[in-house]
Length: 169
Image (cartoon, rainbow, N blue to C red; front, side, top):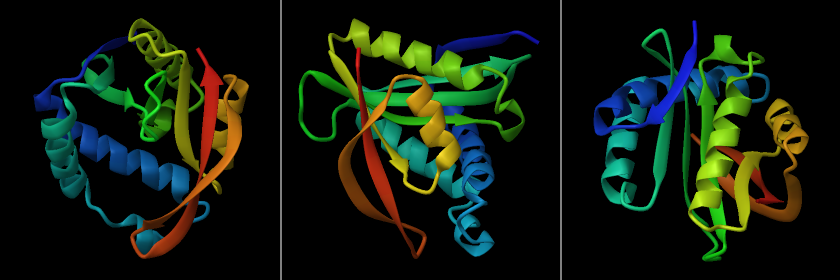
Protein backbone atom coordinates (compact mmCIF):
# COMPACT_ATOMS: atom_id res chain seq x y z
CA UNK A 1 0.00 0.00 0.00
CA UNK A 2 2.99 2.26 -0.51
CA UNK A 3 2.57 5.34 -2.68
CA UNK A 4 5.27 6.04 -5.24
CA UNK A 5 5.77 9.18 -7.27
CA UNK A 6 7.15 9.12 -10.78
CA UNK A 7 7.33 11.41 -13.81
CA UNK A 8 4.16 11.35 -15.85
CA UNK A 9 4.27 9.94 -19.37
CA UNK A 10 2.13 10.47 -22.43
CA UNK A 11 0.50 7.07 -21.89
CA UNK A 12 -0.77 8.29 -18.47
CA UNK A 13 -2.80 11.18 -19.85
CA UNK A 14 -6.14 9.46 -20.50
CA UNK A 15 -6.07 8.10 -16.95
CA UNK A 16 -4.95 11.52 -15.62
CA UNK A 17 -8.02 13.05 -17.29
CA UNK A 18 -10.37 10.51 -15.73
CA UNK A 19 -8.82 11.04 -12.28
CA UNK A 20 -9.00 14.83 -12.80
CA UNK A 21 -12.76 14.51 -13.44
CA UNK A 22 -13.37 12.37 -10.34
CA UNK A 23 -11.29 14.75 -8.22
CA UNK A 24 -13.03 17.90 -9.39
CA UNK A 25 -16.50 16.40 -8.96
CA UNK A 26 -15.69 15.43 -5.36
CA UNK A 27 -14.05 18.78 -4.55
CA UNK A 28 -16.54 21.07 -6.30
CA UNK A 29 -19.82 19.25 -5.55
CA UNK A 30 -20.48 21.33 -2.40
CA UNK A 31 -20.73 24.54 -4.46
CA UNK A 32 -21.33 23.65 -8.14
CA UNK A 33 -24.37 21.98 -9.64
CA UNK A 34 -24.37 18.38 -10.80
CA UNK A 35 -25.08 19.60 -14.34
CA UNK A 36 -22.00 21.83 -14.26
CA UNK A 37 -19.83 18.95 -13.06
CA UNK A 38 -20.91 16.44 -15.70
CA UNK A 39 -18.87 18.29 -18.34
CA UNK A 40 -16.24 17.74 -19.41
CA UNK A 41 -16.50 13.97 -19.36
CA UNK A 42 -13.55 11.86 -18.20
CA UNK A 43 -12.77 11.03 -21.84
CA UNK A 44 -12.86 14.71 -22.81
CA UNK A 45 -10.51 15.59 -19.94
CA UNK A 46 -8.16 12.83 -21.10
CA UNK A 47 -8.12 14.38 -24.57
CA UNK A 48 -7.58 17.82 -22.99
CA UNK A 49 -4.51 16.50 -21.14
CA UNK A 50 -3.16 14.85 -24.29
CA UNK A 51 -3.49 18.14 -26.20
CA UNK A 52 -2.09 20.24 -23.38
CA UNK A 53 0.86 17.91 -22.81
CA UNK A 54 1.71 17.94 -26.53
CA UNK A 55 2.30 21.72 -26.27
CA UNK A 56 3.75 21.97 -22.75
CA UNK A 57 5.88 18.88 -22.13
CA UNK A 58 9.14 20.74 -22.80
CA UNK A 59 8.76 23.16 -19.86
CA UNK A 60 6.10 21.60 -17.60
CA UNK A 61 6.30 18.71 -15.16
CA UNK A 62 3.62 16.09 -14.64
CA UNK A 63 4.15 13.88 -11.60
CA UNK A 64 1.86 10.93 -10.97
CA UNK A 65 1.28 9.08 -7.72
CA UNK A 66 0.59 5.35 -7.75
CA UNK A 67 -0.61 3.06 -5.00
CA UNK A 68 -0.30 -0.64 -5.80
CA UNK A 69 0.13 0.18 -9.49
CA UNK A 70 -3.00 2.36 -9.66
CA UNK A 71 -2.91 6.09 -10.42
CA UNK A 72 -4.18 7.87 -7.29
CA UNK A 73 -3.00 11.45 -7.79
CA UNK A 74 -0.99 13.89 -9.85
CA UNK A 75 0.57 17.33 -9.82
CA UNK A 76 1.34 19.61 -12.74
CA UNK A 77 3.62 22.63 -12.74
CA UNK A 78 5.34 25.00 -15.11
CA UNK A 79 6.48 28.57 -15.63
CA UNK A 80 4.51 31.43 -14.11
CA UNK A 81 1.45 32.49 -16.12
CA UNK A 82 2.20 36.15 -15.29
CA UNK A 83 5.64 36.05 -16.93
CA UNK A 84 7.74 36.27 -13.76
CA UNK A 85 10.91 34.24 -14.51
CA UNK A 86 11.60 33.79 -10.76
CA UNK A 87 8.22 32.13 -10.10
CA UNK A 88 6.81 28.72 -10.96
CA UNK A 89 3.10 28.01 -11.26
CA UNK A 90 1.48 24.99 -9.65
CA UNK A 91 -1.32 24.27 -12.12
CA UNK A 92 -2.86 21.27 -10.41
CA UNK A 93 -2.83 18.82 -7.55
CA UNK A 94 -5.60 16.24 -7.92
CA UNK A 95 -6.29 13.10 -5.89
CA UNK A 96 -8.64 10.18 -6.03
CA UNK A 97 -11.43 11.21 -3.65
CA UNK A 98 -10.67 8.26 -1.32
CA UNK A 99 -7.08 9.54 -0.97
CA UNK A 100 -8.07 12.87 0.58
CA UNK A 101 -6.78 13.26 4.12
CA UNK A 102 -4.20 10.45 3.81
CA UNK A 103 -1.10 12.60 3.21
CA UNK A 104 -0.89 12.17 -0.55
CA UNK A 105 -1.63 15.83 -1.24
CA UNK A 106 1.20 16.88 1.08
CA UNK A 107 3.51 14.37 -0.62
CA UNK A 108 2.69 15.72 -4.09
CA UNK A 109 3.03 19.30 -2.84
CA UNK A 110 6.46 18.69 -1.28
CA UNK A 111 7.61 17.04 -4.50
CA UNK A 112 6.29 19.94 -6.63
CA UNK A 113 7.96 22.57 -4.44
CA UNK A 114 11.24 20.64 -4.60
CA UNK A 115 10.99 20.51 -8.39
CA UNK A 116 10.36 24.25 -8.51
CA UNK A 117 13.43 24.90 -6.35
CA UNK A 118 15.53 22.65 -8.59
CA UNK A 119 14.46 24.77 -11.58
CA UNK A 120 15.80 27.86 -9.84
CA UNK A 121 12.47 29.50 -9.09
CA UNK A 122 12.43 31.50 -5.87
CA UNK A 123 8.64 31.60 -5.46
CA UNK A 124 5.61 29.53 -6.37
CA UNK A 125 2.10 30.64 -7.32
CA UNK A 126 -1.22 28.92 -7.90
CA UNK A 127 -4.86 29.71 -8.59
CA UNK A 128 -7.64 28.19 -6.47
CA UNK A 129 -11.42 28.52 -6.63
CA UNK A 130 -12.60 31.06 -4.08
CA UNK A 131 -15.40 28.72 -2.96
CA UNK A 132 -13.07 25.75 -2.43
CA UNK A 133 -12.52 26.15 1.32
CA UNK A 134 -10.82 22.77 1.88
CA UNK A 135 -8.24 23.43 -0.86
CA UNK A 136 -7.60 26.95 0.41
CA UNK A 137 -7.05 25.62 3.95
CA UNK A 138 -4.70 22.94 2.58
CA UNK A 139 -2.61 25.54 0.76
CA UNK A 140 -2.60 27.98 3.68
CA UNK A 141 -1.42 25.22 6.04
CA UNK A 142 1.44 24.67 3.57
CA UNK A 143 2.59 28.29 3.76
CA UNK A 144 0.71 29.70 0.76
CA UNK A 145 -0.86 33.16 1.11
CA UNK A 146 -3.46 34.96 -1.04
CA UNK A 147 -1.98 37.79 -3.10
CA UNK A 148 -5.25 39.67 -3.61
CA UNK A 149 -5.27 38.94 -7.36
CA UNK A 150 -8.43 37.38 -8.75
CA UNK A 151 -9.51 35.96 -12.07
CA UNK A 152 -13.03 35.40 -13.40
CA UNK A 153 -13.52 32.01 -15.10
CA UNK A 154 -16.33 29.83 -16.34
CA UNK A 155 -16.73 26.26 -15.16
CA UNK A 156 -19.07 25.02 -17.84
CA UNK A 157 -21.48 27.95 -17.97
CA UNK A 158 -21.13 28.77 -14.26
CA UNK A 159 -19.10 31.88 -13.38
CA UNK A 160 -16.46 31.39 -10.70
CA UNK A 161 -13.64 33.37 -9.12
CA UNK A 162 -10.07 32.16 -8.83
CA UNK A 163 -7.78 33.54 -6.11
CA UNK A 164 -4.03 33.72 -6.65
CA UNK A 165 -1.84 32.33 -3.88
CA UNK A 166 1.93 32.60 -3.53
CA UNK A 167 4.71 31.30 -1.32
CA UNK A 168 8.43 31.67 -1.19
CA UNK A 169 10.57 28.65 -1.97
